[in-house]
Length: 297
Ligand code: GDP
Image (cartoon, rainbow, N blue to C red):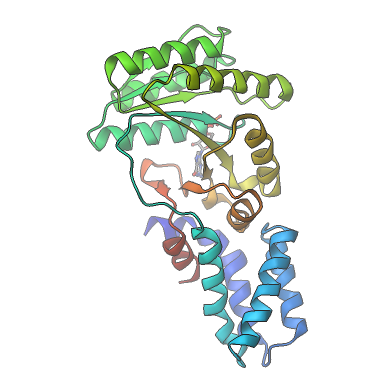
């Protein structure tokens, strides 16, 4: 369905190349592994992760006495599922949660917040939004549009207000109104980066201090089309606010979906959500096995 359609660029640009490679060769030799390395690096899997993957594949093929290159496909798929499902947790906690959403402008933060709010509301839960990107009036306005579209309340101050003060008010409101999910937007201006990171640290400090019984989680929104840049951004944000999960957007817009593997392997942060298009249904829970099945079918 949607997942398969949204991943078609990556399937055609990366997976089909791997499959062609495995069917083109008549024996498993070094040249095959070298070509595989090239394809993976091209697909933004990352040099380090690529080396590990290929070394591991070579070993396993030997151990399992695989002779036909085409039989490598299943082995390769298993490897990817293993990497991507490491630490995958299925439990849905009932605890009221504060979700602090971070990421650079344009990554899809507002859209992701809107879609999460919509899904959570539809599941019968009470949602509140906090307009913490006080740097841009447009960000506050966009979030207000989502709030009325979805039918959830929003806490917002004026443009230029202290975003930690918005977070403070939003958490107090969430506690007194007994909401199940408070989603706090944050600024994502990329210039003046050190200021941004300091601001995010402060917002997280305030949220954590005021959270009471509510659980605090940080969700980082990354644009998959930025490739290895996304990996570097993730490191920056993770250093500042300790990211609990990643929403990887715009996978429909890239042939280099291998970045999913790089993010998981190099950062060890679970990918929670993926965006494969512009509509609400295109934001999906990430699940390793169905992701790989959609890529390889
Ligand atoms: P923000 O600046 O981080 O808040 O980004 P926005 O939420 O405003 O999103 C920027 C643009 O990316 C908008 O045009 C969104 O519709 C678009 N967008 C977000 N997620 C996806 C996705 O998964 N796929 C596609 N194709 N576009 C997306």
